[in-house]
Image 1 (cartoon, helix red, strand yellow):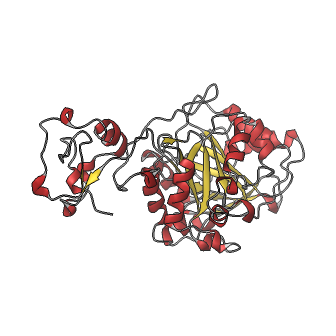
Image 2 (image 1 turned 135 degrees about the horizontal axis):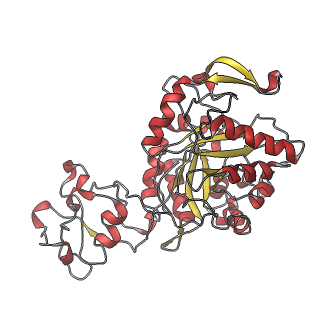
Amino acid sequence: MNFGNACSGDEYFYDGTVQTASFTNCQNLVSQIPLCQTAGTKIFISIGGAVADVELESQEDAVAFANQLWDIFGPYNSSYTGPRPFGTAAVDGFDFDLESGDGSYWVDVANTLRGKFPSGGYYLSAAPQCLTSDIMAPMIQGAYFDYVWVQYFNTPQCSARNFFDQDETRSAIGFDTWAAVLQQSANPNVPLFIGLPGSSAAVPTYPDNALSVAEATLLIDTFACSGTSPNARFGGIMLWDATYALNNDDYAASIRLALNSPCSSQSSVAATATTATVESSFGTPAGSSTTPAIGSTSSSTVSSSTTPMATTLSLTTSIVTTSGSSVASLSVPVAGTSSSATPYAETSASTSTIPSSSSEVSSSWGPDNWGPNNWGDWSKVPSESVGTFRPVDASSSETTTPAWGDWSTLEKP
């Protein structure tokens, strides 16, 4: 168990061998995990990674391993005397990133953990490679997962870069193939996230697989939408990892912005706003709460001085979605309803008319479609850009400014 430079103290040997050595004290995380959870962020422990070598010999091994994970990272139990590197803090879920071995008995690990979850509050996620023949496929088929974020960056033939190399052909990354696989899984409604690298440094073997913001936006528009309607299967974007994304001109912020306005290529103006949180419609297993849509970057940093963590820990941050509400293993979801493109006209501040109430605003672009219910409070857009753009009433040539938010403050792209 390795959390970079966040842990110290005595080592604990689970079965008396050095291979299971674990630090018993991660003091920085002890204080930071509850702080993040209070702010609405979900914390996942991720098991596996590119260089992990974890083999299970039997179903009994799998059950014992799941019990160990629950004792160490699940709810605090004073009768347990083994290591608790996070003290009394507990994680919100367990993520699996298996990249070696044959995948045997891992479905038993997932199902054992699921059986321990009280009613609501805990989640399972999976981060398979982009080929549907991945070793995690049987595990995803046989256990109920709340999120699946596929790594579309480690395998050239189905990477997100391949989408552009093949003239933006939808089948180039196998998203729909994965969607069909998930339809037959234990959770047929599980949201599917597209995993992208936070920068070229995040994928040193395939640095060209990193996408620009413009490319990522086009990818989102393609898979987040079915025509002008949201694609119910698309959960959002997962980034590997938070450190690389932050050092890449805060790439995650740009991705979140793109997720705020999916299908922007069908609109005449791409707008920026604070996005409202909406409830998820994803199905849940018995004894489980509604799965929140989440943003994902498979791991995060503890401070500005830490190096990128391995996938053994996912400190996650709330991000916006087109298909649900917010949480996060660090991945990114997408938002509720869609509408047709809103007509815009460039005008000056002096030519607008302000209706006495929002009922005077045309329903083609009023609050129900473009207002706070779906896009946040437009009145909080900085006032320096007054007069650049206003919506146009579709039923007349008159420009108006809705009472529920000053559209005149929108920045010109």
